Length: 168
Image 1 (cartoon, rainbow, N blue to C red):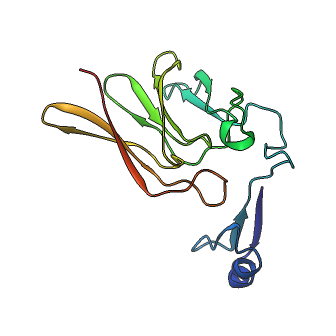
Image 2 (cartoon, rainbow, N blue to C red):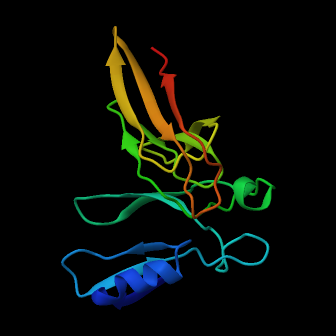
């Protein structure tokens, strides 16, 4: 849920809603407060899916595929394949994989860029609410993500950097 407020009210809004994400939106007339609108059961109030990874054809704007992103494991303790709100972006490799760790269930995943099929996932020690990166070292490619969680989303908090070696 996003609520706008006059920019000059930023300090007052930040003080009252200190547990929420409050941003002044520098240079704009309005600031914003963003909160997850969750039920008493810890799940979003709208119908699932609650998070998707979507491929768009940049030539014509059509949707190429949609894949549910995340499970409810981190929200309600049971891993239902309904997706989750997401905080973080994807990273694509030349080999045709998309890596993303943005879901609220503490996993990093790889998706096939052509089909949208999830082809791999690994548990993280904390929430992966960050955009992964890739690097090469001694001829081998790695994917790295900062797993620190997201303080206002309820994901596991920590202070980790996790790296995975891609197969040859």
